[in-house]
Image (cartoon, rainbow, N blue to C red; front, top):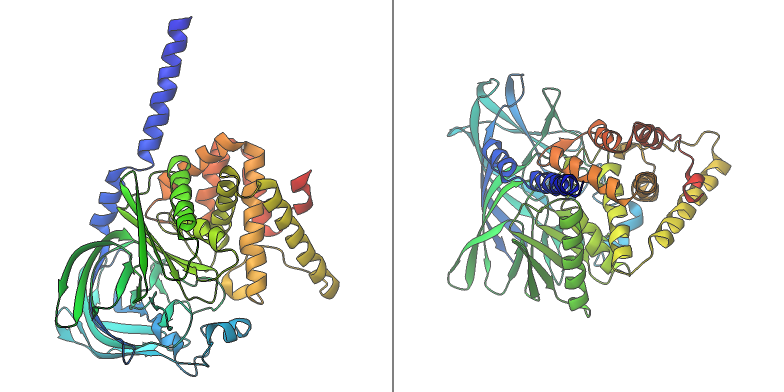
Length: 493
């Protein structure tokens, strides 16, 4: 009996080890790297004119079953121009985003080539936010082409993903990025100033940046080389199988670092009076997610204090945290959770923002509870109150209130987006957590992380991982939240 029991225990331990290793399989990282498109960007920044000049090469493969006569790129930098139909920030954030008065930026192109041949590109899209590059000859499935472009970006004086302030230069979503292909066609969705209107596949990056030597750079990817010039310095980075690439520049940065397993955690700051606490929250939450969800596949992760009009912003290997925010420490944890869900496991952030935002928010509560900073019940009760109060107010003014999860363009304003995506989204995952218990919840989450890493996951994939782990009734729970048929008040029963 004891021998049989020992064998069973050994098998359980072996199974758990196999599952844990599967969730961090280097083979998936290698496969994603091998199959990814490649961006090579050589950029320079002029601190006097606030202009970024770049030469960019994109080596891409047509992975659809369709033949294309043009390749499409989002050019989010054009969203900052004067007269944009979709302003980069909603009116409620305008004064915060532009403390020195409204300022504008744009991207302009000098030339575009396809496989070495100059082509007549066009700027199109609903808001002049898409670069269309003819392929010279029809691009058939599995064929490769190389697109080369030279451009300048005039940065706006704005506290946003892309812009400069007195303290920092934010370079988020600055370069032309391939539009996502869905159902064998390019999805050139317009920019929305609610949420994160980005849907991107993982890609490989080699990025160099030349700038005045006074600047310190926080970046996605790994620093591979540094070379000095006359009053300037060039940094060279490499990032493999990442969903995006971003940088923050400052002549005021200080840096703290700590190693966790195979990953170096960096914290760049200039005004944070609690820098040690901020690093500790980054390290602690990183360890918590690494242990309970799955191993982080990259060599470095950077948390960066910056000027931003929202609470924070996630990028692969790099997150921006708003200086002076009242919820600064919570934002550090939330954006760290995004490294797993948005970063490694992607999703359509336009159609299904709840999948990464709601999950990152709930994982934040779990870590804050684990670390003794905030009881989980307190956070959930507050969200129940916020959500039910909001819906009750809407019910007083509208006959039929839509409480379903929606795409970004269907939310009336940023507040409604937050209530449904973050607040209600976190309540969905709390319901799953309470129904399944901690062990099964994280087993399902690890399964989801393992199966969907380096891809764009769909709601059905997430649902299947939870229902196959905890029972078919979980699919009903998830569907009820998606469709707006849940009863939030029951959560606290």
